[in-house]
Length: 98
Image (cartoon, rainbow, N blue to C red; front, side):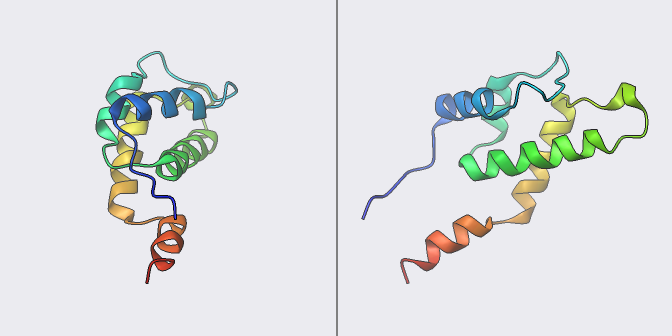
């Protein structure tokens, strides 16, 4: 049995930097340290969920000028992820300990 703790702020900052694809158009206001602070309690799957949904929202914009992801978009999507509760991966992992 190997237990993994949630990543601390510094590691979450690195996860944000590494998980954002180079092809995702980012606004210049994206601050990885602030993303790490806003995403307290997140693991890699939570961050991936946020990026996927933020990118999907940007891609669905009708105006090409708005097809980018900014800090405001990411923070809003982080809040949505927090309100969603556990991910399917979290539920699976937790079910293994019952």
